[in-house]
Image (cartoon, rainbow, N blue to C red; front, side, top):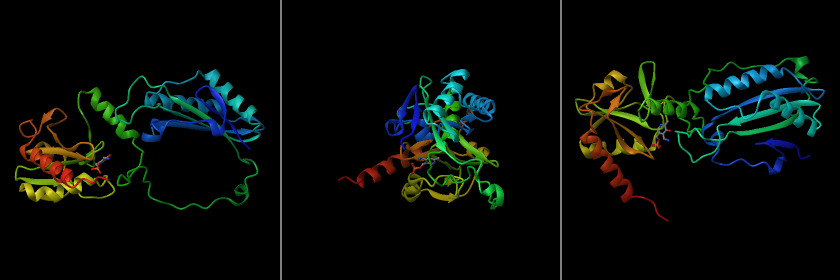
Length: 286
Ligand code: PMP
């Protein structure tokens, strides 16, 4: 059976509801959702869901696309159109669609979708038997080595950096730098050693990082893989980030304090040149 779903002001057959692949819900997990139970065609706990929805949207700086009365009416309408007796109404609001960028525009129109699911909520056999659970470490989200699209925190952090006149952030955990919002972070110490954090689940295993380390010797740099603090980075001669989009990019200050002489480092720029030359010379064409 084809359901009737809701998308941006319209009720549509489910196979006609289309969302852009540029939607930030899709590219950055920049979206919130609510799920409301329906019994006998009526909504359970609705005021609570509305209140949380408003809190979530406010926290992300996304405008409520409809007023509270209309939100309730849309829920009634989607339940009625699908003849839903028992089940769930799923609602999702994303920041909207635009070309992919960690920094987002403030002019976006949120993408607002809803659909129903038939679920026998009352006749749940597990209510008689109970459920079995496993205890696992809470890793939400401690697996940064996986290149997931769960990028909301990074995007919001980069927006905050922009607001404060900076270009990016470096994340700090337990006093040690993990990486930048979308790049790996490295320093060249006063002793002339390239120091970069060792690979673990604390950071993405950058492809550029690996290639640059492979070229370090070529520019006369020894390297060490270990974690380091902001203080050590501020005490370094040079710092830089690496990523597929930035290549090797000098970092000249942290929290307004200069690194080295506050200008792009010579060895950093040399690494940039060597990396680009090396990669371009070996670039794969058709
Ligand atoms: N860390 C994070 C969090 C990133 O998003 C990226 C870029 N995608 C990197 C590091 C750098 O990885 P790569 O060199 O493969 O682009």
